[in-house]
Every structure is written in structure tokens, then in C-alpha cells.
Image (cartoon, rainbow, N blue to C red; front, side):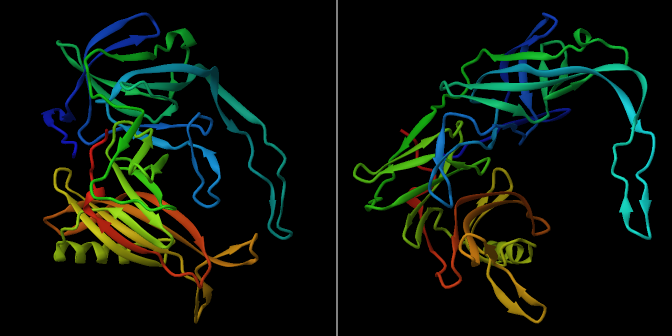
Length: 378
């Protein structure tokens, strides 16, 4: 099931809004409709100290799950902002330049003195705690964004900031900030744990599953019950999920089996022309997201070691193995599609899985299966 984003025009294109209450540090409260610009999402940088664990892509060991997560307003219950640090500061500059002797190439790295000017001004650093309708909570730093708030009489821009800066002469109490956004309509119901049962999919002992969030292209904590045929995904934050199943060096990926020769050729050319760390890039699948005017490509990537006239290039030196190795990954790339000019612009990347290969190891084979593509959660 594909999420359809509705839009209307008011100064800028905006997504469908949510009824919300805004609470400010000076005690003021506003009630109205909060929206984001069309196609925009909020981003939260989650420190790696949460309670959700996933598997390290290289070692397979359990590691804490910390990523930059993207999400819209539709699945939110509340956003609270907390003060991490606040201070009064002044403008400054160094009084002198670093002394450098051009003959001896020696420099004086002793700290230069700072020259302060002007009056003090306040700076406040904020952390955010984001609660979702299904009860899941994430905490971290919200990337700066702009929302639009309609209280029935006017529409204001509402900056969502992790750092607030005041004017010279202001005190910290004068720097009013948004403390809480509470959504008072139903919104979209999401669950912190989703279970999927792909039709006509028979799992085998040893199968491993990997999940990628559809919008933010973030690798998600996932496990598969081979006997019951159920895939369990944590922390999707209301996004659709893409799946890949590995069997040794063979991968089964949920992907549409329909094929457009012209679009595939355009994507293949764009993938080949892109300057990238991976010098071997095999395009496996292309999907046209017509609603968003975007293209998704499924790419089999490898950093090959090779001898050239300019010396040895590619690969990586693995100090633990004491040998050249070749990084590999199975990725999804998102492109903006200018259909009129037949041009693709890369705007996002995510990977199902990555491994470190020996140069003699074969490249994993990729199989596309439609029954793993956009299956509904239970």
C-alpha cells in the first residue's frame, strides 16, 4: 500500500495538516493546524544509546540502533523540546594570525588571544523527544525545519530549531522557545513493531532478512520466523518497508517485476556516470514513483581491486586480515526524475546489507520477487 501525499497551494505547497496545540516557554498557547511543506519531513538524529538493538552489518554482533530518522506529521502524537545547554556569549575574533616561517616550515601553534566585542546575547541548545501514535518514543536532536501554523486568523512560519540564538542585550528568559507540540486529532495509527507475512514465500533454515524504510532509506531492526513465515520489523515509524532475504550469496528482494526498457536504460546510464566509491555497479531494478516524480533503483555494488597504468586502485586494505578486501553492498538509490528532460538527480541512498569480500569471492546474485513488495503489516 503506497502512501499518497495530498497537497494544496498557500504561499507554498503543503501537505495535509494536523490539528495541534503549541506550548511556548513564556506560557502562551496556540491552537490550530500545523503543516509541513509538500514533500518535506522532519529529521531526528538519534544518539546510539537507545534500547533497540540491531545486528552489525560486518560482524553480526548486536549493536545499539542509532540513525538519522525521517518522518512526517501524520503518525505523531507529541514533540517535546528540552533545554540541554544555555549560555550568554559575545562576539569574538582572534587578535593575531599564526606565525609561520616559510623557510623552516615551522609554525607557532600556541593559542591566540580572543578579542571580544558587543553586548552579550543568549544561545539555547534544545533536544527533542518525539512520541508516535503507537507508543514508540525517540529522542535526539531535531534538524532545523520550518512548519506552517494556521490559527484561523493568519498563517505563521514556525521554526523548529535545535539551537536558538537571541539578540544582543537579551536575557535568556527573553528568548522564547517552543516547548511542546501536542497533536489533538487522530492522525495515522502506527505500531512500534510490525509483522508481515508475505504470500507464497517459503523461508528456509538459515535465511536472513533485511529491512529498509521506504521514505528515509534507513536499515531497520528485523527478524524472520522461518517456521511461521512471519517477518517482524521494529521502529519503522509508520513508513512502508522494503525487504531483502539472503541465502548464502543469493538475495531475494521485494521489487516490482514489471520492466520499462527506456527507463531502465536511462537509470543504467545515470548509475554508471555517477562518481562513487564503488567502481562496479550493477543495476538490478528500477521503479517509477509517479506520485512523487521519483525513481528508485536497486543496485548491486562492489569496490573492485584492479591494476591499472596508474598503479593499483580499488579495494581496501584490511589491517585485521593483512590483505586487500573488496567492500560490497546491496543498495537502493532514490532519484528525482525530470521526465521532460529525461534527467535523473540522486537525492538519497540506503543499503539492505553490506559485507567485506575477498577478491576471489563471487558477487552475490539478486532475484526480484513481487510478493515481498509493499506487503501489508499485521
